[in-house]
Length: 349
Image (tube, rainbow, N blue to C red; front, side, top):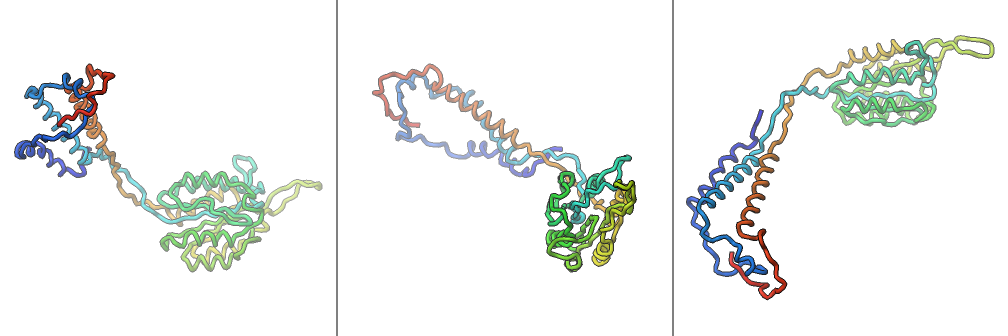
């Protein structure tokens, strides 16, 4: 629907008529106000001083129309659209994803095809991120060092894209779990307490970094950061060797005790993902433990329309100015003599 932001401005519509009706007429100046070149050539084309009253009347109402258009533009006309539901802010959720060398182990499968751990993490995390409506989501990747790949943002599509672009070894081959948690604490400590969540996903143990997982866990607990830890990796895997096929445990380096302690100390839980289905179920369980915001706020989009009456007013003003100049003979039949003897002749306005 149409609406005026400042409708009281329209009350000024009769001001020009009131001024014309009650204000005393302006007096002509006896002295010259402007020096006009070639005045004698221009005099023969100027209109008669006592012009037709009809012309004067039409000019007045034309000016009034321009004035009303300017008032409508100043009143800020707006088109208000239908209500749109926007999700309210939920929580600040930071994802910390391990991209160390061990995440390259192909002990997962998707549609019967062997894939690496990181590929499965990317595949399942994309849907989890898309479901976090109303939450601000950030991304930390870590190997030998920890980096903020994406700061907290409502743009979940960007977070998902940055995760898909993460490559194994980008942050080093080792695993700095403590540094990743410490970086998350630093990024989340300024956010409201009670809404800070870290989902840490790794397949190994802390082998690098400046901060130990225990120290990082203590800092997280002090700041009210809740940590959910996810251990990734199969329990068994067949590998080929010179002596034939044998079964190994590709997750022998996974430090479950540390991950479990981190989760329990901060009010979270430890979840284990041994295959693709289990990892997808982990994210579903996280959705139930930390549900996305469902409350909505209604927003009515507004489109400013003042540009239309303002444009018409400017266009009509230009036409009126051109019409007056033509009546004065400034555009038609003007001759500019070579002789400049009359330059500097004064004319009173």
